[in-house]
Length: 498
Image (cartoon, rainbow, N blue to C red):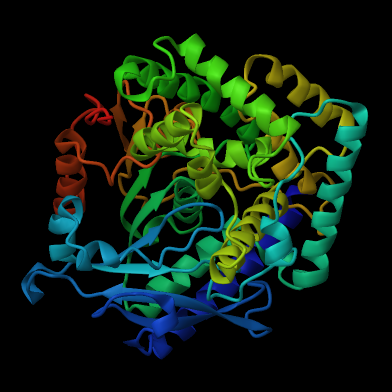
């Protein structure tokens, strides 16, 4: 019953209050970062202790890694800490303070006023990391072609997905039931308290927008300023099965945008001067790799992993086109080097495996997923017809959720609570990973929020790009709290140069 769920939330809310009070007393022991963390000085590192299960605040505790760099302006300019989450689920926020050490111009004004604070969410990196499979096994290539050629191919993928879910339980079973977005939002509140901050200033990108939306719902009166960029649709109907199907459609659209750009720059890349010709080159490459993996290691699965950066990020457009161009001109090695796993990079492979484990654990535990294979088969077969670039690859990545070994929760109903201040929402119109409708949905749910739309653009993660129409507004909001009287549409940032 609904009231039972509410009672559960109440226990967890009480646990979060207890944990935050404890953290406020303890503070953070800041020290120089461990050399292995590769964070430049003067960034400092520390830990914040949180309960694994907020319903049992005095039970098992875990430590979350946090880091910070002080504001660059004077004492009088300081407005507190700005905490960042880059998304995933499974991404580490620890690189965030490096935006100050690397003198990022886009963030220079905000850095005057705020300490930049990053953290590894629960299960990630240095924060009680979880794992589902041996990392070297995880990166081994070539993997099976994601597009099934037969029922036998589908059965093999289903077996892999089931084994992956079992591996998560074997290796990280005690953590799995607690790997949820609401728990990470509670962790965020404990971190706020440990920093000595009365209210949270927050920047979330991609999945970080959903974390922000859930935080704003659970702790509306703890928010001071919140910027969410490239928005996960927070509707309960979308989290998470439908959200992934929506991505497949948006990825196809952005893949075509990239191909149009490659065709327009045919003088540089020689991959064809129409989208259809570029697509033919892609299909030819895919078929060649399916027959015989390039360099013995790069098959269709590895190609998709490499090429999907183009629909994600404009910054990848030229490098990927260049590697593709070299391949078509006869240099296969450049593509193999770019797309094959590096088995000697054990730290990088452990990080990739951990990121995928957290992605799976959070999405599978956050919400109910279809358990019936026919549903998956029908939906993905139908979508694949017109959106072949990502559909099946995405399906197999998420399929462990169909046989997930721990109880799946009901997503929170994201809404405006008492005391929630205006939130700034930033979104490009043609985003592949978080389609535009998600920003509109959050905008409707958070009263008083403002939406900045970057039109004719589709990079995932907008606030880090140079576009004064957006940058100046993000600065104004973070520095003064001021928002435009109405929603704003900005012209796109500069198109990549070949």
